[in-house]
Image 1 (cartoon, each protein chain N blue to C red):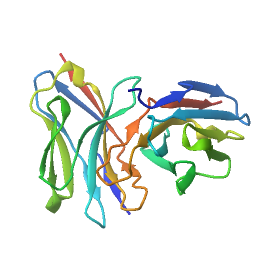
Image 2: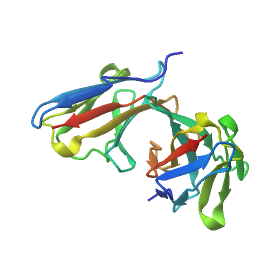
Image 3: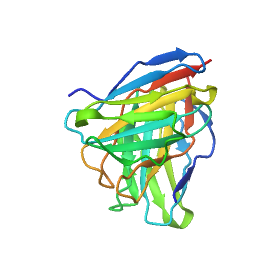
Image 4: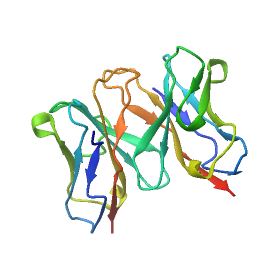
Length: 115
Length: 114
């Protein structure tokens, strides 16, 4: 069974440009989460999808970030326009059910560098 | 609201020595606690989770953690470090909302010396 995959693994862009990150969850997982780790800081929650619906987007930093999950399969996270403080590692995770003990499976992350 | 504090961003041990990674949590409700490990160029992998069934939780690769409510701690231990244990370790607490997002500590990078 394939795990959570993320593309690209690395992205280097200039301030003001647009970047789109993609996450493919484990097949059949309705719950998809985005997290971010800024250099030297803890991993922080961004948002949670249940199928194609946004369940919780309380962690999204501002309206430059747009997440979608059309069809309830893969998800994209677009940053437009990118700022220096957006640099970090963006993780995606998925789970089959959101129960308290249910494990979230993480992808390897996308390292975003904004110059 | 939940929060997690990991004492020590870097820990260095000799191969064969005891590994102790510290985690303290703050939670207004009974916590659901996890330890994840990240090896280089890989995603986070679940080591173990506290489910309230037992205070001593055993995980993969010989790791275990003990839940101590009086100390609000969930420290991770391994009796004998192996070179392959070198990685970054994250303690996390799960929220009590419908989505159950994770709140992470800052991470501890474990280095194992030969």
